[in-house]
Amino acid sequence: MPTCEPVDLTFFDSAPQRFEQSWDVPRPAETFFADDLVADALHWCRGLRLDWRSPAPYGVGAKRHVSLLGLMRADEHFFLWEEGRRFAFHFTRVNLPIFTSFAEYYEVEPTGPDSCRFTWKVAVAPSPLGRPGGPLNALLIGRLFKDTTRYVAGLTR
Image 1 (cartoon, helix red, strand yellow):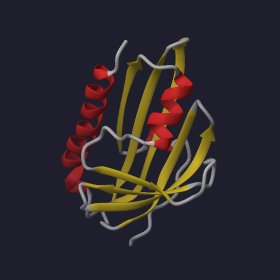
Image 2 (cartoon, rainbow, N blue to C red):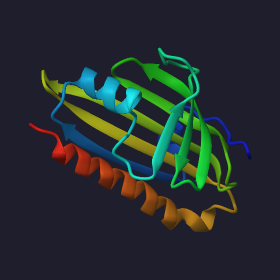
Image 3 (cartoon, helix red, strand yellow):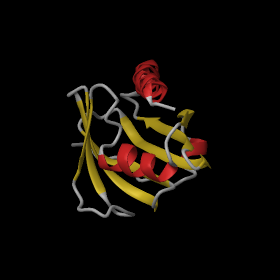
Image 4 (cartoon, rainbow, N blue to C red):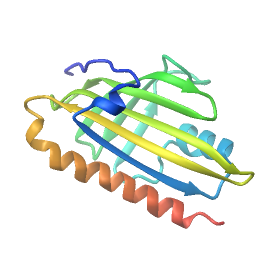
C-alpha cells in the first residue's frame, strides 16, 4: 500500500480540504467517547469498518485499520489521545494513491451531566492523482456526517 505523510494538529487548519461538523449528543461525554467513538467506533456509519490493531487501553501510538465501502483500506496511527476528551489520527498507508495526507480529529465536550457536544474534523491533502476526486471526498465525508446526524437524532433524550 502507498504511504501517507504524517501530520500534526496544525494540519486541521492548513489542509487543502477540510471538513467539520458538531452535534449535540444526549449522552454523558464519558459514555459517548468510550462506547461510540472507541469500543464500537462509528458503528452507525454505513460502509465503514474499523478494526483496532493495538491492544486496549488505546492511546498515542495506537494503530487501527479502516475499510470504506470495501474499496478503500488504510492504516491509522493515533498521534493525540486525551482519554474521554479527544483524539486524532492520520493515515500511514492507504491502498489507493489518492492522498498524500489524511487525518481525523474527534472531540467530546460535556455540556451537562447527561449530554455532550461531539466535533468531528477531517483534513485531506490529495495526491496529484486524487485532486480530481475532491468532490467525491466531500460526498463521502458528507455521507458519514449525515449518518452521524441520523444516529444522534435517534438517541433518546
